[in-house]
Image 1 (cartoon, rainbow, N blue to C red):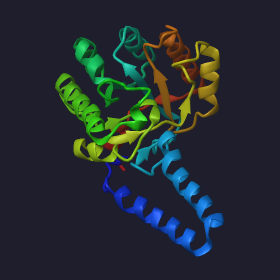
Image 2 (image 1 turned 90 degrees about the vertical axis):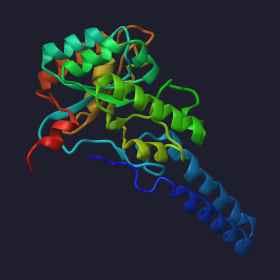
Image 3 (image 1 turned 180 degrees about the vertical axis):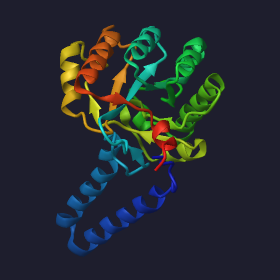
Amino acid sequence: MRRVPRFPYAWCLWIPLSQLAVLAVWLAWGWRAGLPALLASHALCVVPVFLPRARLYAPVLARLPARGRAVWLTIDDGPSDDTAAILDLLDRHGAKATFFLVGARAAARPALVAEIVRRGHGIGNHSQTHPQAWFWALGPRRMRAEIAQAQAVLAALAGRPPHWFRSVVGMTNPFVAAPLRAAGLTRVAWSARGFDAVRDDPAAMVAAIERDLAPGAIVLLHEGARHGRNVEMIAALLARLDALGYATVLPEALDAAPA
């Protein structure tokens, strides 16, 4: 499952080659063929930036190789005022989750990070400052700082470095892969989501996630949203998972399981 980037600078080769191919088409057949080729080549470079499961700039894990009715719960954007209540909910349902934490928020609430680890949940890297509007456009220096600083903070607080990274808003760009490789991180997307960061209707959120539930699904959840209902939403989802017979699993448990 670990998918640390092997060739983080591959884009330095294929992007220039793609533009040379466009130039060759333009010279051979003129602008009527060259212009569409140019637009298509640019779209192929830009559109994957906004697609969470796109693998163009870095490999990504979008589903677990789990057998049976088991899913991976991932909770973004903490720690927050919701974290303690979410931990209690998970305990009551015998569920495990990975918390993708923002480095600066974790540094401000170290006791919550320690409690997540103490209760047997996972920790993931979700950037240092969560630059939601601009993560997709970060340059190499800022991208490296966002990933490396969060990795250092979380490793110090949790006692071990995270293995998993979730891009802010799921976006990426050519500069993501190199710092992921340096930190030994695997980028994680999702296969089921209910838009709980913006939607304030627990029933609608659970219904949206349920439509995409399947063995090995990676479920995207959030904490600390402005609408203030994330705890209620996670409670509703956990009750529904129990009713459907779904268990929760951490990828580390699958790695440790005998073949």
